[in-house]
Each structure stands twice: as structure tokens, then as C-alpha cells.
Image (cartoon, rainbow, N blue to C red; front, side, top):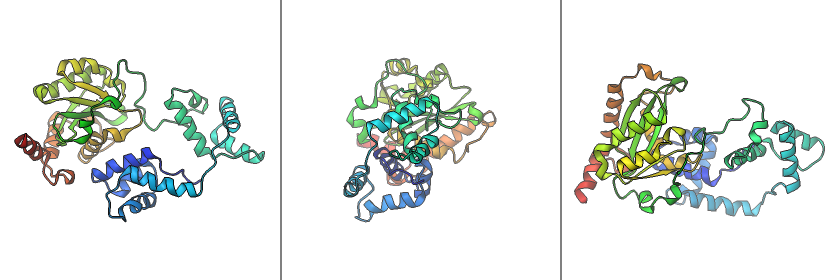
Length: 315
């Protein structure tokens, strides 16, 4: 079954990963498309001599698609799909049943995407699928966090990466979802802070973030995370540090591209599947030091420590 075209959200992820130096094979694995698809996607912009930009790539694709427009399912067809889902039919069963009865056909891939969109709007269609046949691509939005401030309200200067003090935060989880490493990174300098945690409760995460950033309190402006329940004590963190705390949109990991890239670098030293009970705090600090003294292409081959000093000198 042929996959649907890359969406604008996919292209923003690709742009972030390209900017962070990821190879096409790594990008393909992350977004769930073939390497050849990613090569073609990059080529249609890069062959014009430009760096890859999501908006331009999406514009090129949109123009091409307008020449061969695809017909969206009618409301009647969508209503029929919803009806069959509520009768506990699988997307494959619905798709093939439509074909068999000479009704307007829809691929099972489209139905799965429709279920996911419904899920993002707090719908319940996914509950009618058999256990294990559907899992949202990211489990970050497990419960609504009270009084959260969306990234849409974050000042534009944070996106410009022209100042120090705008951080992203995340958790790297150990084998069998036990143990965690807190990962914090400055969006501009890529200077990171890592800390091993015994667990990942909101209280433990709150205390670890405050401990890591309190010495730099006067130099911090914002903190951005995903919507995991472990960050539900965000108001206490913001108050203690005197900062603004923002949440990325659910399932939009590209909005936290710096910390996602950091997590990938950490995994070079502490691979997936590692039992964090065997990882000592001094090992985590060794990794932190290693990464902070490693030249980065996106910093002009300065290390994060050197780049931080460079910005401070210019201030």
C-alpha cells in the first residue's frame, strides 16, 4: 500500500533534523518513510541551490498536486467509516468491505490517519480498535496538564536563537520504562545539562530541573517541554526559577528539535535498551562534559562551551 505524501508537519521535522546534521537514513527512520522518499524530498529543494526549508518544499509539492488533485471522501463515506469503526471493524475490514460492495473506496492507511486526527481532538474512535492494533505515535499527551501555556504564545525571539537562556527539557527513559535521565539544552548554544533520576514522577522532575537550573536563574528566560505528565508541576518550576514555561503542541517533536537532537547524542553513549540501574551519575556527567566539549556544525564548529563564551563576550 502506497503511503500518503509527506505532510507539512513531516517537512518541519525534516528541516529541523537537516539543520541538526542528521543523515537521510536517520530522517527516514524517524518520520517513517523510505530513504529514497527523503532523498527525493531533499533533492527538489537542494537542487536549486537552497538549503532545505519546509515551507518551500511544501509549496513545490502543493503546486504539483494541484495538477492532479485527489478527491477527498464525501461526508457520507466518512460517516459510514465512523459507523463501522464504532461496530469494532478494523480499518482493513472497512477498506476492503467498501471495495467489495462497489462503494467509494478509502485506503486503510487513510482510516488510521483519520483515527489519529480524531485522537488528537480527544476523540474516542481508537477505543474501538483491537488492543495492540493502534498506538499513537507519541504517548506524551496522557492527561491534560492544568494551566499550561502553549508554545504559540512563546516570544518570537526564542525561535531566532540569538540569546542564551531559552531551554528545552525532556526525559530519556531507561529499559522497561524504568529510570530516567533529565536532559536540558540551551536552544542557542546547545550547552546541555544531564541528570540521572531514580524515577519520573512530577515531583522528582520538578526538583531535578530546579536543582540543575537554579545556579543560572538570572540567565534563564524560558523553558519548553512536551506534554508528558512528568512536567505537570510546571507552575512551581516557573515560579521558583522566575521564568516562563511553555508546552509544545502534542505530537510536534520538531518544536523541541534541540533536545530531541541532544537525546540522540546521549544515546551514542547510553544506547536504547540500557538498564539505567547500571548507569552511575558520574557516567551521565561524563557524557554531559563530552557533549559540551564537542564541536557542532550548526555552531560553526565551535563547541557549546566555546559558543556560550563567544556570545557572552559579544554581549
